[in-house]
Length: 209
Ligand code: MD3
Ligand code: FE
Image 1 (cartoon, rainbow, N blue to C red):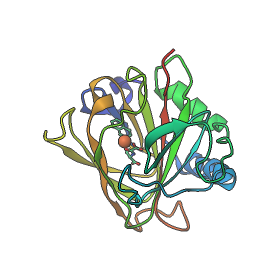
Image 2: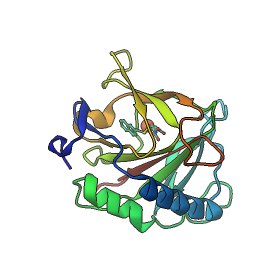
Image 3: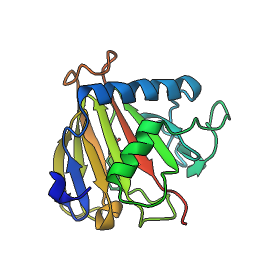
Image 4: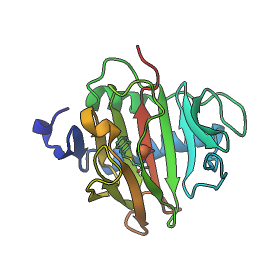
C-alpha cells in the first residue's frame, strides 16, 4: 500500500491508514488475539537493570517474541513465564502484512501490547531487530491512544496523533527508527473490548534474509 491509496504521510516513510479495518474485521482480530492469549497469557515486562514493571502488559505470537526483564530487551522463541513456544501467527495477521507491508518475507514476530486505562509507553526507538530495512506494521484495537512520533533524535520535534480502533500504521524507511510512544489512553472511547483498554499489535521482521 502507498500514500496514493488514502493513507496519510505523517513522518518520512510513516503511513497512517485510518479506519482501515471495519468493526467485523476488528472483532475477528480480537477473537484471534484472545485465542493466542489463552495459550500465551499477558505477562508484565520489566525494565532492564532496575526491574521496574511496565504499565503495558504484553504477549507475542509467531516464531519470535519480544520480552524485557532485568537482564535486558530481546527476542526469544518462548514465553517468559510458561516457557512454552509462542503460538503461531493468525492467518488474518499474515494477510494484513501481505496487503500493507510491501515486504517479500513474512513477519517473524507479533508483539501484543495491552493498555489498561492508566498504561503508557515512554518515548523509545525499536532497535532490537537485526533488519531495519523491513517495515513494522501496527494495528490498534479498542480505546483510542494518544500517540507521539518524532524523528531519529530523542530531542527533536514530535507530533501527536490519536490512534483509533481499526487504524493501521506502517513504519518504513527513515520512520522505522523514529522515536515514538503512547502518552495516554482515552478510556471509554471504544466499545470493541468489553473490559475496556487497548490492544496494539506490531508485526515485525527480526532477522535478516
Ligand atoms: C514507530 N507500540 O510496541 S504502535 C511498540 O501503540 C510500540 O503499542 C506502540 O511502540 C503502541 O514498540 C506504538 C506504532 C509504532 C510501532 C512501531 C514503531 C510506531 C513505530 C517502530 C518504529 C517507529
Ligand atoms: Fe515501539
